[in-house]
Length: 267
Image (cartoon, rainbow, N blue to C red):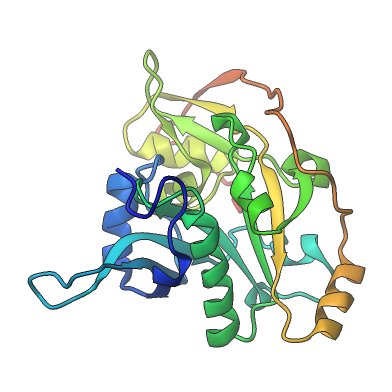
């Protein structure tokens, strides 16, 4: 059902404001295609103003959220341009909006999150986001909101990310972000030791598909924007038109015995 006309919503009804991480997590885990929570610095609720109030007297309906967090990689900021620190950059890690509110709802809501960040955290100069090539996503929402496309993550010499599965047939892949959260590192030797401690004799790894990388510059002035664009490390590329091929090789590994005496340093 379309709430507003055939294809478009009344964007004056759309607003964003900060919500609790617990509410945002519930939305993402239940409704986002990944069904997985992620790092979060700001959870921004996306609201739609109704014609009538509900039983609690509210005329604002929470229809989605955008999640921003600090990028995991230590070099994420400097991979954009020199002079940026980790405190100057946020990554858009999740965006979800309920269906039925028009084809322009996501782009309008996303643009309003940009303004919220500019108003509430003046340290942030750049937003970073990735479109999941493995899911066939090209990043149409980023094109609609004028992000700068920088190519695939492999084009800009970012380290590959590896997913882990503790079972085979079927594989049950654990995303690289969760791998770090669960075992403290993606280092292979470290994983052999830590996964072995949990009683597993083996596990499987595969390189996650390279992702399309986009950046959005949030300057406080035209001069600052011009300076940041001038300092970008990677050239702007045309928006992608089709998904790219990627390596799907799955590698089998055996773990170390839990009581193995190994004098190794992991990082």
